[in-house]
Length: 125
Image 1 (cartoon, rainbow, N blue to C red):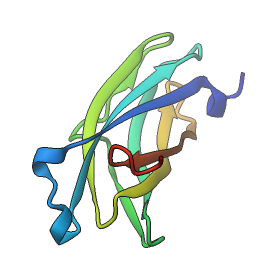
Image 2 (tube, rainbow, N blue to C red):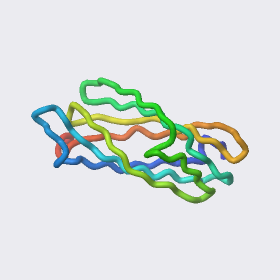
Image 3 (cartoon, helix red, strand yellow):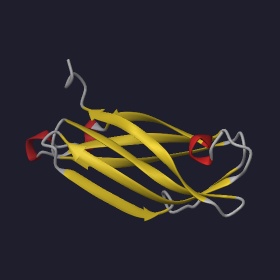
């Protein structure tokens, strides 16, 4: 297994109705990330790179060190979980990206964050 395939990212999303103001085109979403290390080396999450698109195809690019103020090291066959959020101007959007990871041997590699949809309830019916 290559290092790029050793990290598996899964995402669950939720619409935060109480924090949203649809009349002001403010739709707030939380996303919960699970990063699982299927590899044989520990890996440290060094940075993130997100592409956040709303329903108008306006794309925000977000880069930064770590996640939620941390640069976690994920041991082999272990997981790291965190939650964060995004604000969109439309009822539907998507996010995708990657983490830059550093294996125990110093090798840098990308862990893909698969595209996922952010949508208010019934927006996609």
